[in-house]
Each structure stands twice: as C-alpha cells, then as structure tokens.
Amino acid sequence: MNPNIERLHEYAFQKLAALFSGIEPDARLAPINLGIGEPRHATPQFIRDTLAQNLAGLANYPVTLGSDALRAAIAAWVARRFNVALDAKTQIIPVNGTREALFAIAQAVVDNSREGQRAPPVVVSPNPFYQIYEGAALLAGAQPFYLNTIAQKTYALDFAQLPADVWRRTQLIYVCSPGNPTGRVMPLAEWRRLFELADEHDFVIASDECYSEIYFDEGSAPLGSLQAAQQLGRAGCARLILFSSLSKRSNVPGMRSGFVAGDAALLKKFLSYRTYHGCAMSPPIQAASIAAWQDEAHVVENRRLYREKFAAVLPILQPALPVEMPEAGFYLWAESSKAAGGSGMADAAFAQHLYRNYNVTVLPGSYLARDAHGMNPGAERVRIALVAPLAECVEAARRIAAFCRSL
Image (cartoon, rainbow, N blue to C red; front, side):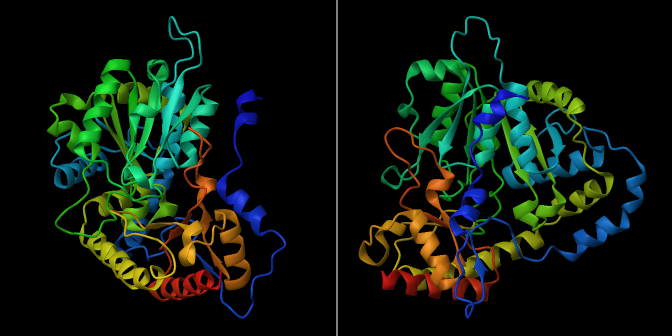
C-alpha cells in the first residue's frame, strides 16, 4: 500500500460523528443539520427532464475530453460570466465535480524528481481549507504548507507567512474564492501578487471557484481567476487552472458535474493523465450539464433564496453570536468563543453542547484547519451552512441564539 495513506488526517465529518457519538439530543426538537455544505434547494425540473430524456447515452462509452457541445456550452458561459474567451478545444475539460479534479491535479502536477530538489515538493493551501487539498498533496508525496486566513487580516492570503525557501519548493497552490468557510473574494491586487509568485517560482495555481455563483448583489458578481488574469494581461492564463462546478450553482451535487479551464499546455498534460484515470463524464450527465450551463434564470432564483435566508437569520444571531455577512457563498463563519459576550467556549464544545441541548448541527472550525504559524485559525469558530429551507434556518438561528444566551 502507498505509505502516504497513513499520513491522511481523519475527515472533518468523521471527527464530527465521533464528537456526537453517544449523545442523545433533545427529542422534543426536530433535528436541523447546518454542518455540511450540501445544497438542499430543489434541482430545477428542466435539468431532471434533460437527464431523463438522454438515458440512451448510457449505451455509449464517454470520451475523457467530453462532447464538443458541452465544451462549447461551458466556453459560452465563461464568456458571459467572466467576459473571457476560451478555446473550447484546448482550454476546457469537463470533470465529474470539482472534488475529483482538485484531487487529481496534484497527482498530475507534483514532480518528486525535479532536478536539484533536495527536500519534498510543497503544496500550499489556505487555512482553513477544503480537506481534499491536503489529502491530494499528501498522496502525491508533497509536503503541505498553510496560509492562515484570519479576521484580523480580512481573511486575506498573507503570502509573507511562508519563507522564500518554501516558495522555491512550491509546485502547486490551491486557492478558494469565494472562500470556504469565510466567503471572502480575492481582490485583483491579491491575484497580482500570486501570479508574480507563480512566475518567480514556477508553480501551478489551482483556483477552486465552486461558490462563485452564490453571491448577493446581482449587479456585482465576484471576481474570478480568469478575469483577474485577463485584466492583468496574462495571455493564455499562464500557470492557472480554474475549477468550477454545477453542484452549488444549479443544486445538482449528486450529478457530479463541473469543469476545469485555463492554461492550455497544462490542460493538455492533465488530459493525458485523465485518460488513464477513468473519469470520463457520462453522456446523460453531459446533456443535463449543457442545459444547466445554458440557463441563468434558475441561478438567479437560487441566489434569491440564499439572500432571503441570510436576511432572516442574521438579525436573530447577531445579538448573541458575533457573525458577519460574507461576501459570497452560503456559510456563516461565527466566533463561537465570543458567544453571548465572551463565553470562551471552544468550537468543538460549542458544537457538541448545541447538538445535545438544541438538536442543531454545526461544524467546529478547527476541524477545517491545521495548527500553523502558532495557531489553529478555526479553533474559536464554527461554520454554519445555510443550506436548509428558510423555515429550518430561522428555527436553527433561534435555537443557536437561545443556546448562546444560556452560556
């Protein structure tokens, strides 16, 4: 067996299950789960219908590159959303959700035999982070390094946290914008600095943008990596790969459909890797994906539902729990240690007691982060995913506020 498997950390939701093991929550209260970031809005009917109408495609082997029609639909969406023109033949590859592609990119990029390398290659990620970044790095034989994103620095990626010798060994960096769990959107200046580092040290940027379509001002969509590259004059999206998905945008997490786009030279090699990886998208899923990427009305409605929940929940929570409206995404990144004026309760204890006494599930922030630079940046926070229906989110907010006031 690959010895790097032993380096993997327990997944956050396994830790959460262990935290709740043996606890019997108050049975008088219906359970409300705001712990996992799984969209629970209804899948649009037209996507379901398109999938059903194309089941004959199950009789055909799919090709790894996907159909011309799907890549054209994705390219058209990128042009509409980001005002960036991509070559659908060389700069786009459909993938089975961003999770598998975010994992696979590290296996394709990391080079353990790079000439002159005397220490393990490095993969950098934000901290807190989506745990796939870390697992992908470890199984590729790389050493993870973390950039703490903290409120005192507006959750920015502080590139100065890592010394020059670490950047010299860096082969891949994961970034997430809008961020999970902070909801922060990377500004152009931050992209400029990241591109400068990539050029200086020759590493690949994997930009996870699966939350890019969950925002609150219809007139101001979040800046994307391809936009930033274009605005900074980076022809061909050098050293950049965007990862995008229909899961949150179109409420189809079970469909496993997304795409990667960007640097054609990188994607050519990534396609070669994927040809052996066995990850071609099913033809019925491709057909349904085309329909989803071509429609925006359902996405606008999806954003309206999230706006409605944030507007209802925040006034209930904020008098008892320090929490701010994110720039984008569907998470609240709440300061559990300062609940009700400063209880000092650790994040795991907060989640455990909330579950026991109020039957509401939230995720301890430390489960999403690692100790780095003298701290765990999630240790005093909890992540609240506003994915449940409006009434459930409001009821959960009332229970959380009551719990905070009881501390």
